[in-house]
Length: 371
Length: 176
Image (tube, rainbow over all chains, first blue to last red; front, side, top):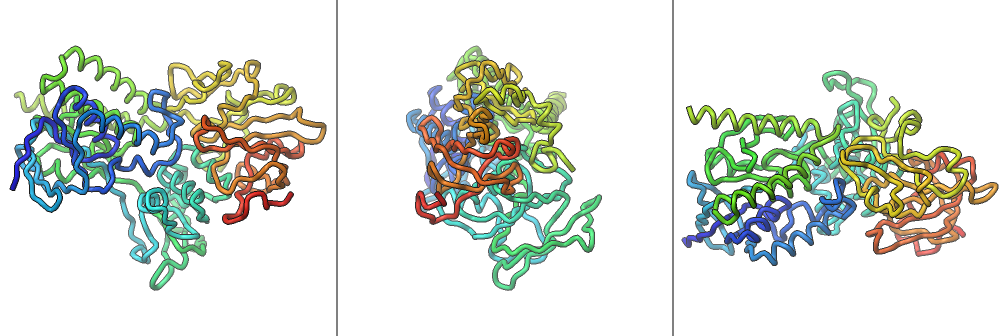
């Protein structure tokens, strides 16, 4: 077993992890980024649509372009990136158990940043285990990374931005989206994303859910039903669609396993997808020297993940003495201002409130600890 | 229920109160941007791309884009730059009988000038036949094509896009 020493170890080479790596490495830290995937970039390279946000967030630029640009900055920064590499555990002292090229390593870093992202939620209904029922994120990987069309006729469940954007991209890839179904009485994502698929002729059924998927060895059809208050199905409102694929865009939950192992304190915030680690405005958790960034701190979107990564990278470099408190304060103020922008408006309010709750819980935790 | 949060389509009231939609009088005078952006989301590339200062979002990035219809020349740079594909250029002065719409389009195959296509509404329903006048793809558009289509004057408020062309169809083989 080999031991690797480094200043900063980062788990996850997605939006948040790469941003953190760039900040820490350009400040002069020795940085190792570890990712289990074959390619770096996390979900960024699947995002073929133009991003929202401000010009500082490269709004109007397609996500994969932002990913390419970030990756080339990381490569120039001197950070090392280990791909195809599994982090299977973290000790209480934050040393990482790692398998790289078939060999077992212990990575001991002065600072660890976990940017592990999130995983898709699933939903159970009769037929939900048939081949052809898949997460919307999986379908997006198939079309935009592997260039494989998962099906010809698709029904999407969930009208958050993931459901709306992936529906659009499935049509760009050549599939028909026969309907989008949403359990709530209103559309969850941006109206402009919904507008794109409506112009393409896709009906949106709010207050509806999937009753069952038909088929014996593969998806042959789907039956949806209207739901009343409490999401109770209303008999007699069933509709059938001839489809070969059903995509589920029913939310994501943070991949917090490593952080639990390290003994971090958590809080439960439904707006963020479940249990999330407490962290301060430096993105540091209740375990000293362990930072978090991106969807693992609460599910948001790529731009805020990048900004949280920037924050964690700057804070880690500061605590290593590589940035003066003044230099760090200036950078952090800029990043925090941009983050606040991303959490503004009618769609940002729920996330802004949740983030305040998370930061406040951290303050209470530290105050209690100091007693 | 009506309204963008229920249907994905802005209602007539939402459009009437939308600061990005030009006046009837301005539309009759010639090419002008029509920004159908009715939800306060954090987004402002339209403001930055306009060379004429005709679009204002302001400090608060969630403000709705506000169109200064006198400054707008109808150049169309904003059409491909809006990540929401919510901007079109309308020209009601095109001819006695026809008006034109420039709309963003991100599906292949693309139509060609001269093609007759199905012009569709905000809900994707075929409204009338459209005549393609021009298809513009520029590096600055970053993969979004902007299509100029002529439709009968009476449909210009309803038409917002065209029906996707079938895959595998040879370029230029749509009905001329």
